[in-house]
Amino acid sequence: MQRGQMAQKREGDEPKIELFVKASSDAESVGNCPFSQRLFMILWLKEAKFLLTTVDMKRAPDVLKDLAPGSQPPFLVFNDEVKTDINKIEEFLEDKLAPPKYPKLCCRYKESLTAGEDIFRKFSAYIKNPVPALNEVLEKKFLATMVKLNMYFETPLPHELDQNPNASESTRLYLDGDSLTLADCNLLPKLNIVKVVCKVYRKFDITAELKGLKRYLDNAYKRDEFRLSCPKDVEVVSAYQSVVKYLKK
Image 1 (cartoon, helix red, strand yellow):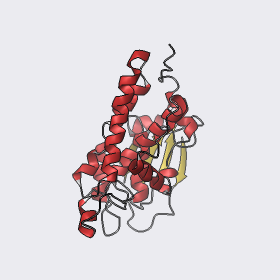
Image 2 (cartoon, helix red, strand yellow; image 1 turned 120 degrees about the vertical axis):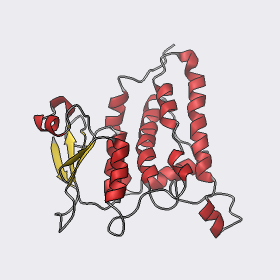
Image 3 (spheres, helix red, strand yellow; image 1 turned 120 degrees about the horizontal axis):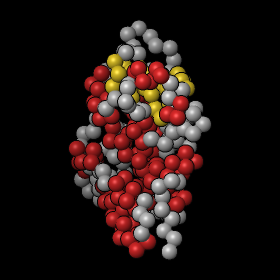
Image 4 (spheres, helix red, strand yellow; image 1 turned 60 degrees about the vertical axis):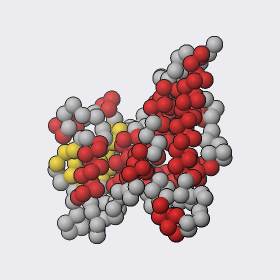
């Protein structure tokens, strides 16, 4: 278990926050876990002071069994209160770390919350498929979810049309606008895995044809909150090595 301070010393009435995440194979950096990265990003975007603890599950210390018996990382300790449900942690942090001290991360459009929701499931079916004859069908289903998400990024949102009624294409940076939101914290870690795994095991890149999606990822990788919370590519590749099917005929 490795602990690293993600902020300066707490001041005044700052809550005491510790985020426990899955460790990498070297047991020090962040491992391949989109749920861990999701919470990591939320706390970073909230500009909260927190302690990040990586947990090597092969040698999980007894203290974890005392903190969250039966649970797997990620989980959160907030002022000595343990939280283990990912969605509830997100809601809790949005409620407790609220304006004016902390930025709001909720979306203005409900469609942003569900954009890309099928991608990871279709990707998993595609990448884990052991039957060569089914590969083309599964690939098409997976790509269809990418095209659908791309369309969401290319379509102007209402506030963009308010600013320019003649806009035919969106220029926004992220899912819900020009600020990262809870929806991005959920989607981006999954897209990073998709990008890395598909490139290595399927020789597939997100092409320039998916203009909106490519713009989104390019913008996201410029943000420290996303880029620096990503696991190393080698961690992602290694995590999928045992489940990916090579489709040898």
